[in-house]
Image 1 (tube, one colour):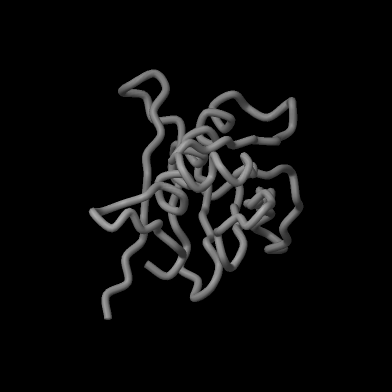
Image 2 (spheres, rainbow, N blue to C red):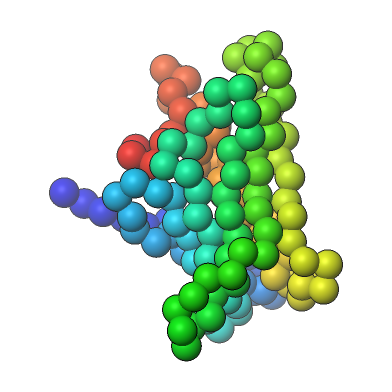
Length: 138
């Protein structure tokens, strides 16, 4: 059985790395480490066991990572927002919201925007000829 991890580099402007996003393996939950330009983990992102939305938002919690005590402090979230039954069923258009502290470094805000695109691509875009959606288990 091959286990692979997603990793994404975020550049702003192109050619200047501002951070990375690395998938952390977990059997049930989508988990990601949000890293600075030197690959130091500064935040963690954790989603629900089933990343599907049946008449409700899907929230991915952003936690500040304190490495010394290994405690997590919630600081925001990325939400895939419910758009209504017709739009959800008949289109591949999604609405996302991002909440983070106002005083967060602008480079980390750019990385969170990148995470938003990654979440949309991995969990909510239809892929292949069968138009199946990716899940945590695919």
